[in-house]
Image (cartoon, rainbow, N blue to C red; front, side, top):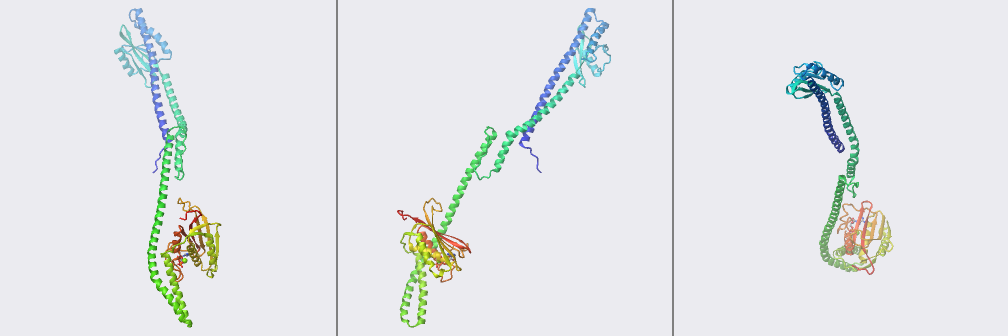
Length: 512
Ligand SMILES: Nc1ncnc2c1ncn2[C@@H]1O[C@H](COP(=O)(O)OP(=O)(O)OP(=O)(O)O)[C@@H](O)[C@H]1O
Ligand SMILES: [Mg+2]
């Protein structure tokens, strides 16, 4: 179950309102008590003044009469007291003798109850005045002894009216409650506004910005310039974001360099595997070529000799011609193998790439075998020269073009393009310029699973006798020897593009 958690603003406001209510209640309670005490003291003083007047009247009477004449005393007191009682400030004032009989005033006034009785007796006995308030808080009764010659002869009971005081106080109390309520209302309304402005809105803004932060762009929170805790918080958050951004950048850089290292490692591994393969194959090929080459030379020599002997036998001549053809094929394979294992020393010189392409495409176009193929060239003017052996480069080009034509049994188009690319597309810090020659066909393409194998020696999909599978292996070896490389892109059923990249040769340039 979800429990309700008040927001920051509600919590602060509630606490403040509560504090204010407590403080105001306490203060008003103390003030009311003090006021009440003071007012009661004034009223007591009023009562005591009446008592003093009675005492003075007693003393006057005894001074003139010499001894207390109760009748005269009662008469004199009666005059003064009835006047005071009529002022409205007092209730029925009574003077009670030591025997309990009323000298002046009613014998049984409204306030005279049992408690008053015992109080009167106490005052007469002790000779000390006392005060008492009734339960309705309308009368404050002062009971004081009256002396004659230091002897208590009576008690004066002066009930001072305090209903006006009580009413005034309760009015004040109501007023205080009203103002406390009003204060709380004002605090809630203004406090709400101020808290929103100073605390809640800036915090909400921070929360919104933090939520929006996706970690992609450098991001900083805006803070107002007033130097309060929220500004400090914003600054701290900004510092944290900056650190996060830095860490992220470092992490990304690390990941990038790891990826590059991984890729290089993979390439290096493939390179090593290929070189090992080529090395062992080269040794085998060299051995076989050597062992088989001599007997083949001898067979060819003998077929030539034999040809003279069967000049008039057509059938035998035909057989001999066939033998010669097959042996020549073996010889070609042996020679290819030798080429592959021991590439013939190259005679490098500057080669004009455009001229080389033109020459070879013209040669290919003349071949009837490729009549169904449309040959096209796209040569960038002045593509440039490369430093290579023209014959070997030609061998590469012809192999690529023948492979393309072989892949287009039912016709298609072959495009040979040459252009200069600069700088090094790998961007590996080199400013070397390259010439790119691409051979594209619209043939059957190469399956994804096979594409990694096509540069392997003896990998061929052609029927026996049509291809040895050495063409691409030799081409790769030649191009790498000239500091270039071969790339292939292919889509099965749509065609392939073989791209050769070779460094540009410039006059007065170090020929490496
Ligand atoms: N343009 C191309 N389109 C489709 N497949 C190709 C293409 N070029 C090469 N291949 C595939 O690569 C294989 C190897 O080619 P590679 O030139 O090394 O040998 P080959 O052409 O089979 O024989 P050869 O030694 O006579 O050149 C081919 O048999 C063919 O399957
Ligand atoms: Mg080939």
